[in-house]
Amino acid sequence: MPSDFIHGWLIALKFNMKQPSFIFLLLLLQLLLVSCKKNSDELSFAAPMRKYDLAVEGGINTRFPGQYIRLTKPASSPDSLPTPIRKAVVTVNDGKSDLVFRETSAGIYSATNLKEPNYNQAYTLTIRYNNQIYTAVDTLRQVVNIIDDFLPFSVSRTADGRYNGTIPKHTFGYLNPNKWWISYGDIPVWNPAKFELVQYYNYTHFLGSPNSLYPLTNLKRTFDLGSEEIITIYKISISAGYAKYLYGVFLETDWNGLFSSVPVNSDGNISGNTQGYFSVSDVDRRLYRMKELK
Image (cartoon, rainbow, N blue to C red; front, side, top):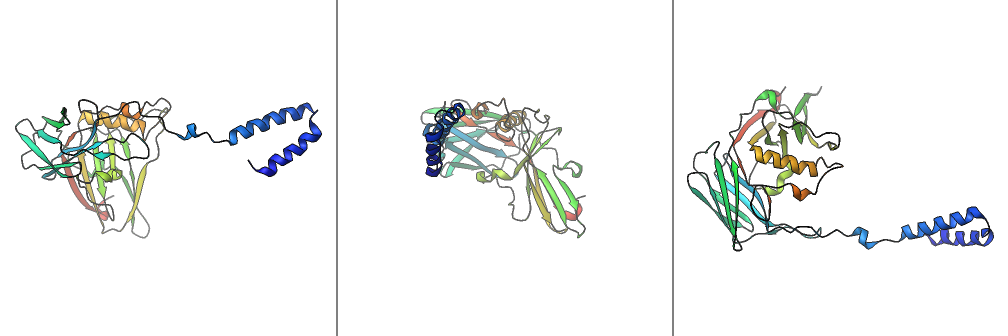
């Protein structure tokens, strides 16, 4: 509160002590002085209600032989970061045999899978860490190949022969839920080992858009490319359980609304005191020159 402002009020007080209206203004001044005082409690974050043993990301894909799973200890305060889970024992069973993962960097576990996909069957993840066993199950759904008429973005041709595109993060009303990765220019091609690049995914949902209590944030990215430039599209299948999990997460993040619950209430498929989702995905890829897109 500026000192000149307070000094002016003191001068006015000397000449207006007997005015009823001034008494009201004096009370208002007291409220203003209180509001100018910072309350450190209001700036602090409440301690988390629940602390998790670990978080799981990644899983199995049919596009590359390399498979990657990341294990971390979730952060419990806003000024800290998740820490890698080291020396865990990680295996995935595809219904026929086990695939053993090795820790290749801090918290990153990888394996090479040369076997044929086991479509419509359950894949079981088992993690042994700190004298605990955690398991998860997901089903491999075969992806429907990319079709030109059902691409989750729009493109228009400009007068000078360039192509402007808009890629919404969420598109609703598709027959099957999928994750997509669309790369061009400086956007890298899809790599399941790059967990930090989640901002480049976009999603199609078979459920409708949230109602008015969950306002849709206008999340999208745009591009401007020449007619000969290449756009690469990856379509990644997800199971019904994973689709439901993602929809719940987005209700707390992208579509946060009046009746949203605590974000950690979006339960994944890993047993025990954990976060995240172990996923199994089939992948299709297509390349287009921009002039091939209508």
